[in-house]
View 1 (cartoon, rainbow, N blue to C red):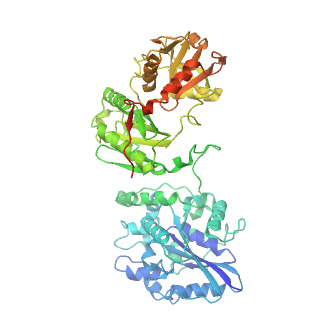
View 2 (view 1 turned 30 degrees about the vertical axis):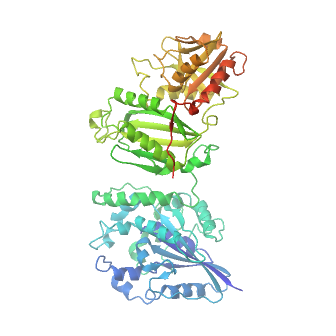
View 3 (view 1 turned 60 degrees about the vertical axis):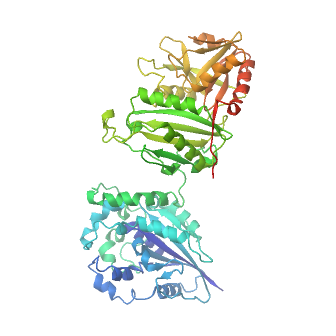
Length: 598
């Protein structure tokens, strides 16, 4: 019978959890562990840069002198009659230069054939937040005596783990497997489930709790350096022990190590997203992406001098950005129909008027904004059924403050494009209609925050939306300070009364682009249009009612505050306006054609 052996090459940064993981595998009856078999080779190569109190002993150690293939052969022999076994090799990421990934042996080594044994090599990357690694560096300072110890990116190991990931993913071996990534923080916080997921990914068995505990003290698998580094793990008896690195500690990050942290974070963030057993961090159950393509969209973020496309899970702006500091930003919503952006010129005109009203300095140009929009849509392959949230912030500040004088970097542009139908979970039901309630919050008057500035200070809108959510309504109608209807928390409002189209004037509401369009279309189809103050009672008694907005277009309202509007069905004028609105992407003067995407 052929023995089956999985050889796990675990690569990590030099901290306690890699040793704890080795002990977890060592507790398995089917596993033999080997501790850093490449350490001696690495220390010989780098002896001019690093020194260790055990250096001479390690260089002359008879077991450490053995070739990697011979040590693996010895481990397999120790398994005896076990049919399915595991050899766990703990490697430091900085030792990667000593390993030949295409041959799964040390550089220049001999690849042995194992008669009667089926071998499967797997590579496991144990990642940890580099801030934690850097912070804990001084804890073992007594063992750091080399000239490169304090500033060596290689010692932290995150960049090397990224290099290992690339090598493993590019291996040309006939039976190669993708790298498995494991978040060590996740392992410390939820060890049993994480170990179960890990074993599943590695294709080996796992029995509930079998790798959770071990005996305290030194282990037979320990390398000869163990007494210098493994004290914390030797004092532990399993994953539930705080001594293996899950306890809270509050340490200083030396300023000299901040460049290492800065260089390590991009690789860590990429690898951490791939950690086995890690699901998307959605804390509300049942909420998923309306369109699964939105999970991997690319966003545009940048200043006037430099912008770039970033995957959504890596997209961010500085905590010093004005949008974070005080909602100091303006925005627009754009819709894409069959290779065309509807009313782009109108939206950009309002965006820049809002920015000028806010006295933004060092702004993006119109051409830069359009170019970023086109690049974002092209990168995502979006030519139809897409919506863009276009945001322009005052930009990043040099210090935390509301004072615009500290904005010295220019505006920040964010182009967030999503696959989003006009009718769906994030929009409205434009066929059957929706229900509204009246909000208790009043709309900001121009004397407070002028709605003609399309700004990001939206708490005045969010609070009514919360009321609508709790009431089971689509949105909430907001009244002005005198009790007249202004708009909803998200859209403009129209009613039809006796064949006349009526909408509140824009003194207390956003003068919406879609609102302006419907006024024009009303005249076009011969419907009288009136802009004036409108009371809530007029809305309750209206023949028809609908909302307007870029995202949802025209949405019929069939109930307000529990009162049926008109017949309770979508009205004739509403239907006529919906129909003609659908023709706008094909009418000259209403759209901007997207360029070809290559």
